[in-house]
Image 1 (cartoon, one colour):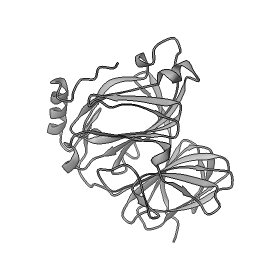
Image 2: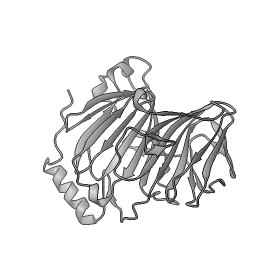
Image 3: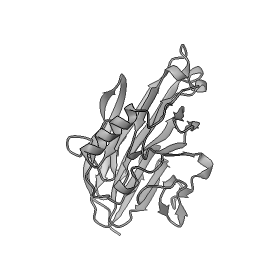
Length: 289
């Protein structure tokens, strides 16, 4: 099978998110979204040991209509939400939330983190939900290292955790709102792997750290997002140093997207309804204990 062509190579641009510097390769002026993927943020933060953890990080805020997914690269993330979920995910683990009809959640460092190394590194990915699923009840899934199937390259130098979707007779542990393939991998120096992308899926690869090359294209540096064309093919990777990456693929929803901050709907009226519902308390109240 031939290599998929790289359509865009997007660098991470540092932006300000309410006082937090965040690296953002998607969206950009060139590429607003890669249906169904809306946003990818990469943040590395050092927290203070002089304040409680629940006074740091990102405080309570609402979401509706999509799935925010957090990959913990380093440190820990303490998730709390208005549906009663209270969970700490550590390095190598994933928090997958479907906001559905709406909820309020916070994303803090753990108390253990602020008292210890104090460094937190995360990737957050926003995945759009189809119109038919946007008003489902919210759900939250914590993916520990133990429940994610581990795939290995032929040379044994590339290990990939299957987060979502079906791949090589394995099934990812999280239920999704649409057809997805999400792999989180690590490659050692000299490691090689070929990934088969399902037919009709949009696909992209984000290199979290390290360096390597993409078959049929060339050099890939850390903190860059490669977006592939839709032609049939595979993604071939060759790592020149120890690396970490996310391979993201999904069947396009082909639906209109209207977004205002934390609400992602199909029409402006639906966004206004989300704002009203949040203000009226219909998404719940989060009291952080």
